[in-house]
Image 1 (cartoon, rainbow, N blue to C red):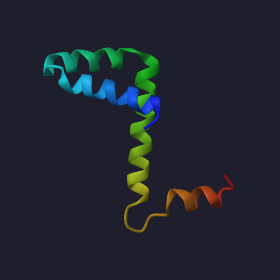
Image 2 (cartoon, rainbow, N blue to C red):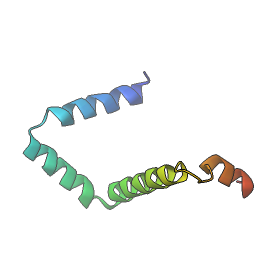
Image 3 (cartoon, helix red, strand yellow):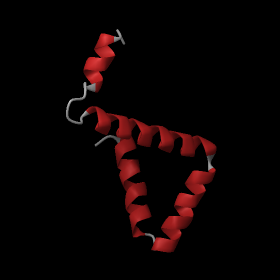
Length: 70
């Protein structure tokens, strides 16, 4: 595990150990930060697109990228 991954694991463990109210306060603070909120929204959008593309009869994301020369 890399040092960055280890640090992320420490933060995740700390977050999960907080009481529910403190977790909600922390999440609220994340959502107030415009940069963090945008990153989270982008990641959620990408996951939704990936799920949709894996659906039956859909073209894979990799095949789509290849077809446009990306």
